[in-house]
Image 1 (cartoon, rainbow, N blue to C red):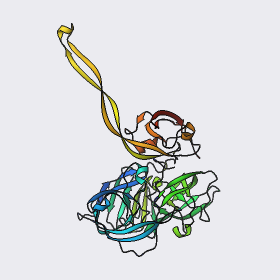
Image 2 (image 1 turned 90 degrees about the vertical axis):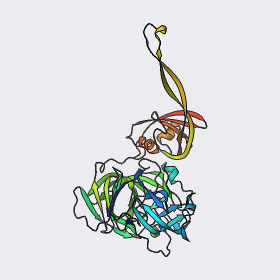
Image 3 (image 1 turned 180 degrees about the vertical axis):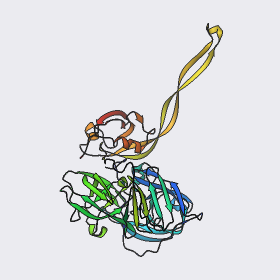
Image 4 (image 1 turned 45 degrees about the horizontal axis):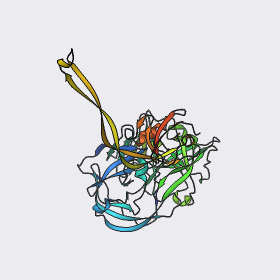
Amino acid sequence: MKQALVLIVQLFFLFSIYPTKAQSSFSFSDGSDKRVFSFESVNNLIIVPVKINGVTFSFILDFGVNRTILFNNDLISELQLKNKTSISLRGFSNSESIKAYKVEATLFEVDRLKSFKHEILLLEDGNLSFSQRMGTQIDGILGATLFKNFKITINYNTERLRIERSQEKTTSCRKCSILPIRFRNSKSLVRASITQEDGKRVEGDFLIDSGSSDALWLFDQHDEIEKPTSFFPDFLGIGINGDVFGDRSKINAFRLGSFTLNQVKAAFPDSLGSYKVLVDSKRIGSIGGELLKRFKVTFDYPNKQVVLKKTSKTFDRFYYNLSGIELQYKGESLVKEKVSSFQSRDIPENESHNRGIKIYLSQLYRLRFRPIIEIANLRVNSPAALAGLKEGDVITSVNGKRVGDIDLQEIMHQFQKKPGAKIKLGILRAGVRLNYKFVLKALL
């Protein structure tokens, strides 16, 4: 399970082969060559605000996707999108392909970057549960069309994004590793290696996939990849055409440029019947947000390189969610809360020998919207399941803090503590308030 939220939003896409036209390039509206702005980091993913024909949306920034994807919702009718052409999309799940439309936005904006006549893939099915599972609104995915003419530097620690138009190639960098990028279908791949359980080192290409909140995906359908003997089955995430399942484990080491990370979390997706179609023979896996966020990352598409700079978090240990709980956001409820009010009044001299102030404590109430955070899935024999928690339970408090005072990410952070940490949950089940306790337990 993933850092910060148990569900891993895996966004691996392969588009059915169809004729495409060149995407409209982005340019700075103010004539500058560089822009720095903030992004929101949610579950190891990068969320940026975009405007389509003047309407604001929230998009995942995904280096593993070669197009702009928009999920259908109530605001689409306001956009007046042009030139609808029906196409089909395929992904890693076993479901059938889904219908989408190739449309054109008159104006597409990311901060002060603008693209005119921007091509978008509009998914017909708008019921994707990315927003529900992440606890924040997600309207689409912004892919490589933004990156191809720029250097983009992501600082996960400060949640700042720098985009610049520069032809200068990085040749040296203190505490850095510079890796060449290979492109396939406009997607960026780098060379890296893993050390397996038997000590064998396997080298191959890895997709740089900032749209995955996992650390690594490995394809044991590849002839040289061997799944470790210690693993556990799990739900890996949501794709555009269905859920993805597989196994989770840890590999001995992962070598990326000059950096070697030990005991790295890895997921092994199941049932890739179309593996040879979806993945070329040189590719053995994907690098996701949980690993990328350990570095300050510069993607330099014009010079076909990526620069990884060491940070204080580069060599932190990798932990799975130790509780076994997968949560999802289910809207909001209006609750009545008790608050205390202190009032005072002067005491006249005729009521007391000493004039003073008398304090009164009265109880007042207020109405407040609080998020509904529900247990979506429980891992079998996990600490939470053994304690008696059930799917559908609504979390009301975590270690004494009420839901609403802490958000979905903070709740899941509690489940990422070291083995042995104690968790106290208040829950609501069929209108009855209950309390549960359990201790986090290491998985591997």
